[in-house]
Length: 142
Image (cartoon, rainbow, N blue to C red):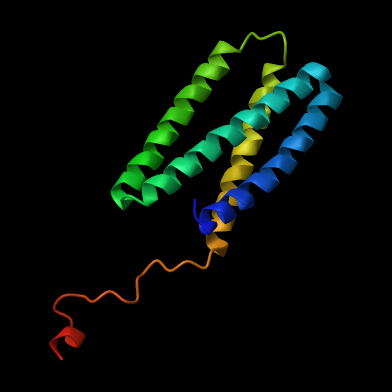
């Protein structure tokens, strides 16, 4: 994992952890221990999903931009499917509060996405290689 990837991870994970902590406290206050447990599980699910995706995309970026895009789309599809299965599977859970889980997942996902976008905008990363020679350019004919 490159330094840029770690900065992106920190830019998204720290605010998400704070939002998750707030969600756990609010759920504990409103619903009780079942709400806190549901919110805590929601924070863990979001953090795990997005961290795995970021690591997979960072690894694929070293191979090829095409593979990176395919990996990003594939991990997105897998996250949505697994989340749908989790929500359906645990809709009638009695050990923890499914509504606290769902609302925390939504809040943390929004926070992670905004944090990742903000982190990306703050990166000082060249998206054009200044050393590349373009075939047929005026500089090449000199």
